[in-house]
Length: 517
Image 1 (spheres, one colour):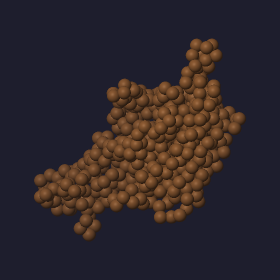
Image 2 (cartoon, one colour):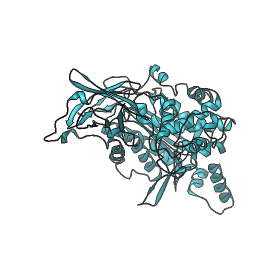
Image 3 (cartoon, helix red, strand yellow):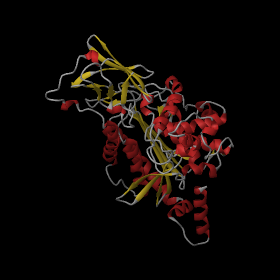
Image 4 (tube, helix red, strand yellow):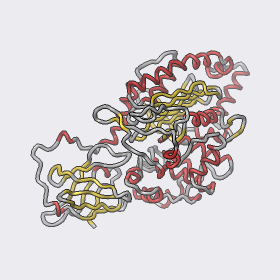
């Protein structure tokens, strides 16, 4: 819709001699832009190698698509640290939130086939999502959820996933949370709200989500090594491990990340070769190898701004979110759609497309906690449109990513600042018991061989409790959102057992207090 209108408007003004925009000129003559892209290819290969070496993660895959052709496909490093198996064009990577643009593409295909509409309510397609009140539950639409404007607070439900709760339970329990902002009058990034929107697509198709994506999207695009099932990723012989940087500065394949509970938002796995096919289809406005996968006017709805995601007061520039896409406008390239992906347990990815000039770049890495994919994308942008790299994007992006992730460590206890003269704990038996709230369910605090231990969630996650100060103890959170150690603070009367406990790590949404049962 919007994209075709823009292109038609440019074409009309051009042929009437009223104006020839830089974009239209580049497409008309085809030489300046093509020359810039061509000259940037060896430079971006070298820049990717520099990002790998400076940041230290084990492996990377990079692709550049231009005018419906893969003009660069580069792989660097190894699939797993300490091994010698190289990353190849057929190595399967977990994509984290690059799942979201793929899910919005699937939605567009389903809309094109008449299975549902962008503004259908998810309730009308049998999705068991509960929001804060009955009216919101009945009226929230697929587009609301895929553009993060539903009112759900940021990352609602993610901590429940870490504890092993199923998607069905999470989609019900997030209704217990107070809205983070008025319905359709704000933005907050929410994996499980997005997942509910993806579930509506699958229900409309009458299949599970992963099967729907296979039949309606991956097979037509020849994406044979792509899946929304974690089991498919794990069974792939040529797959990349995920890595974290540990305290001594080295990288370790320490974790396994099963994102099935939020598959539409974070469960995609694919190869750089498969992913290039999807990029070609996006840039060709829904067509792949001469076959229309989705009509251009339907696909472009996912590129349209649906919510304002931010505002830069220094540059007076607003940023927007479409349906599974970050949306901006670049004066010398037109529409710019992009997304990044991150598993703190060991994945960083990014994709940037310029549909009006048929240019795109994607970067996949097998290490977490860095900004290298964005740095490579920013550098490529400079190389193509400015002729040279304008700054140290690798250092800048790594620093910015670290600052961004600091919000997830706000409840972390600095163990190097232990109380000099901590107050003594009560008899440990006074802390034992079962505590609960409606959102997280029960927590069991028990003692084994003189050590207090906390247990919670369907996964029966356990952590020892280390005395910190008075009735406060330290524990180690688990999962994707775990940072360092957190506190467990018991409320203890003068006599008898603790009446409740507070876990600040779980209190970001006001659900961190647990009462004794």
